Length: 455
Length: 146
Image (tube, rainbow over all chains, first blue to last red; front, top):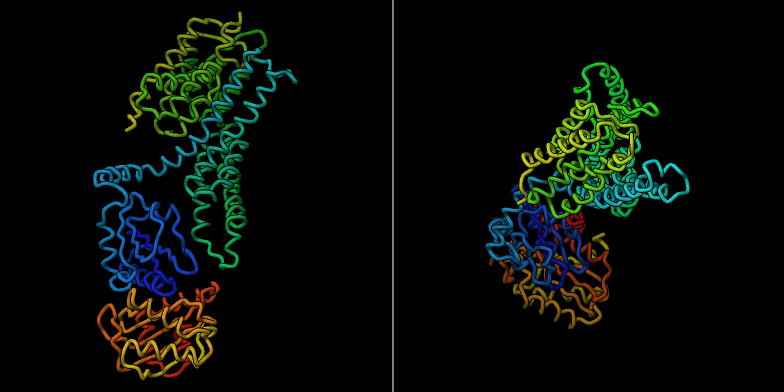
C-alpha cells in the first residue's frame, strides 16, 4: 500500500512534525510506503508532487490548519485533527484505505476506480500516446509541405533556390527531422517528467541520425524515461548540492547513458541489417517476382523510414535504368503508399477505433499516402505497434505482390500519385492503381479486425 | 545544533511543580531567568493559549508546551522531568514525565525552526523517551536528542 499524508498545526512548531514522525514510524512497522508533507512554520517541506499523489492509494490529512486540498480530488482521503495522527496512527491507515473519494460523489468514485484500473494497465500505452500526440503535428506539417513541393514536379525540389526546394527543406529537412526526437522526448517526458525530455530528445535524434527509424526512437524514449527516472529517484545528493540535480546531474548522466546505448547497442545492428537486407534482396531478384514483391511490401511497411524500409527503397532505386520502367521500383513505391492510405481509409470507415486526434491525423494521412510519404503512418504505428504494423505489412505485401504479378513498372524513384499522370512514367497504369487499392483495402480490413473500439 | 537552543541552564532535572499550570510557570521562569524572554507575560499567555486550543500533552508521558511570541528574544528549549508525573490533560489520560518547552520569537529563522521540528520528531520514538527518563546529566540528554 502507498500512502501520502499532510500534517499541519496552528503554531507549526511541534505537532506537525510529531504527527509526521508518528505516521512514518507506524508505516514502517506495517510495511507501507509513505510520504509526508509537513506544513509547519518553516513552510511546506517534502511537498507532495502530483506524481506522489497519483501513485498513492489513499491520502491522510492530519491538520488543524488550512491545507490545500484541490490536488487530492479523486483520491481516497480522510481528514482528522493532527492529534489523531500522534495518538493512533495505525487506525488512520485503515480508515484512509476504506475512505470515500475526496471531491467526488460515490458514483463518480466507482467510475473513477474503474477507469483507474484500465489506465494502470495501459502505462506503457500511455507513454507511447503522449509521445505520439506531440509527434503528430510534426508529421502532418512536414508531410503536407513535402507534398506541396511535389506539386511543382517530383524532382523540382532538387533545383536549389526554388520554392519547391524551400518546401522540401522545411518539411523534409526540418519538420521530419524533428519527428523522431519529439516522439522519443515525449515518451520519456511521460515517464520521468521534465528530466526525461533531454535524454529522450537526444536519444531520438541519435535514432534518427543512425537510421534506426521510429522503432529506434521508441526504444530511445523508453530507455531515456526510465534512466532519467532512476537517476532522479535513486541519486541522493547532500541538500546543499540538491540544486545541481535538475540542471547538471540528471541531464548529463541520463543523456550520456542513453546516447552511448543508442550508438553502441541499438545503432550497431542497424548498419548490419541494412547491408544484409541488400544482399538478401539481390539474391532474391532472380527468383519468383511475386514473392519478391511481397517481401518488398513487408519491408516497406515494417519500419516506415527505418533501416529495413530504406534497404527496400534503395534496392528499388538501384533497379532503375534511365528511360525504362522497373517493376521492382513500381512495387516499392506502391507498397510505400499503401500504409498511410490504408490507415486513412480505416479512420474514415471505423471511426470508433481511433481517437479524435487520430481522425485529424487520418485526413493528413490521405495526402501523405498519395504522395508516397510512408511516414504518414508512423503516428498510428507508434501508438499501437503490435496491431498497426502487422496490418500495414499485410496491405503492403498484397500491393507489392500484385504490382509484380501485373508486371506494372515505374520509371522514376518518387512522386506518388503525381507521376501517374506523366506519360510513360508508369506502365500498366490501370492495374497499378488496382494493386494499390487492393493493399489499401487489405490494411483497412486488418485494422478493422485487430483494433478494438475505444471505450 | 540543538545546543544552540538548549543549554545546560535550561534543564530542570526534577520539577517541583505538581500541576499543569505550575509546570508551565516553573519552566517559563527558567527561560526568563536565563534571559530568553523580553516579555514574560506575553510568552506565558501564548503558551497557555496554545494549551487551551488543545493540550500539548501528547501522551506516552510527553508534553511539549510551546509558544511563538514577540515576548521571546531568541529561540530556546527547556527540558524538564518529573519522576512522579504530572496530570497534564494528556491525550491518553496518563501522567506526563517528560516536558519540552519550546519558545520561538515571532521572527525565527528557519534553522532554529528545523532544530525544533527534528526534536519533535525524535520524541515520537519510544527508545528516545526511555533514554530521556533514564538520563542523569545534561550531556547525556544532548547525546540522546542531538
